[in-house]
Image 1 (spheres, rainbow, N blue to C red):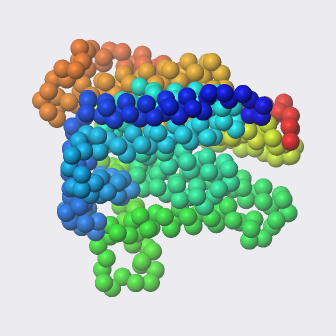
Image 2 (image 1 turned 180 degrees about the horizontal axis):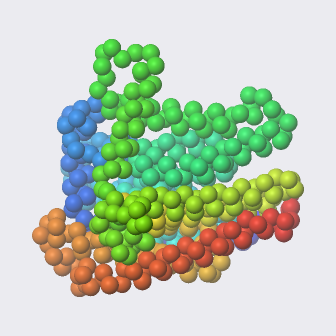
Length: 448
């Protein structure tokens, strides 16, 4: 912010980031979940051996193609520098992604909240036990997915629609649940189009947000997919475009239908009473899966209506300046709520899938002490949830009874309904805050 005294904030911030990254590297050999980690290494070896086009034909894989490029590169590095410990190398993408997220948080918030709060928020994520547990210890890649997803929303908010489409495509090609953010991204793109029209620029340039985002998303998705397709020599014309789209649809369906359970160790609504139970069980004649989809859809409609009301009210009054900053924060809060609702109410969710919501909440936590309190709750629950999942899964994979921890998973299970209730309560409180904020436009004064 203008006139803010930064003093030693920048050098101290950079120093802490560097030391934090070194700490992550040093901690990487510990508490790895071998089930996932050995899968990464097997896929890396497989794609190195058989190539992109034959990989899915010869190896079981429930992932979209995006992260396989990373594994292919890691295998090349591993062979070129065999002295690098595997635990460090194969966890490096997630650790680097967490660093990237921290830098994005800082760069965005320094123009919204000032350098001090930006640095605090950035470090709150990078040094957060939640991000450390997922990336540095467990060895999962949820932050690799969250980074392009966050970047896409921030680029869209800053009217960089082409780059936003590219980034959204990368996020989707890593993890298909990115699709839940498309309505918000679509709203921001349409908003850009309408603002162009209002600026009396009706013509090709008016449609540039729609055209740039759509073209970038589709072109990037196709380019990422093409190397994985075993092309028939007769394929030509429109088939060159349609074949990658068919492939994407097939991979998306394969990824989504792999685990048809209400909750996969997640401390969410379904985890309170239906952990590892089929989501085809019914209540009042309706499957758990359908109930989750309907509840999520209703919540999403409520969030989008609030965001639309906020934008339309400001659009009519011609507000800018402070209102524009307020709208960006509300958009990020809406993104958080969507990802949080996905974790809480949709079936087939893993314990790790709360991390993207925590990433987005980092960008709005500075708004109030209450939000910081909620941020602490979410982060703590996330760590506790990973601890539970780890102690549940490790004995199945390695026969190791989880000697790192004194608490067996069975001793945690009685607390899951209470934890799920706590998370739902936090969600409702933040949702109410968002809806109140979406109706406060008439109190926001234009500062130019």
